[in-house]
Length: 61
Image (cartoon, rainbow, N blue to C red; front, side):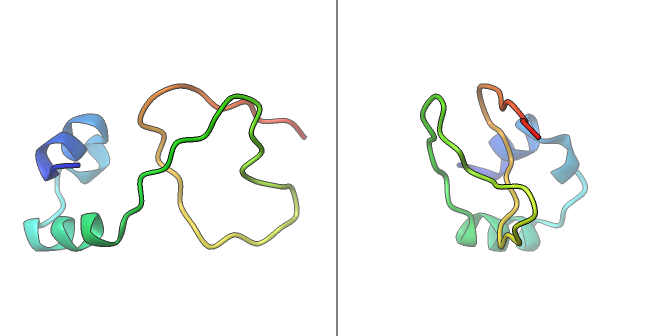
């Protein structure tokens, strides 16, 4: 993903410095999850932040 594309999809990054944005994109992983795939579990520690580019997520507790 290109920096301008990231800023367009996620306005959160509009004020991010270019060097910081390049660093973020260099470590970011883009993944595709299929329907009914569980990606998070309640009461478990995670080590990631998810940004949804397309589609939707169903949260079940």
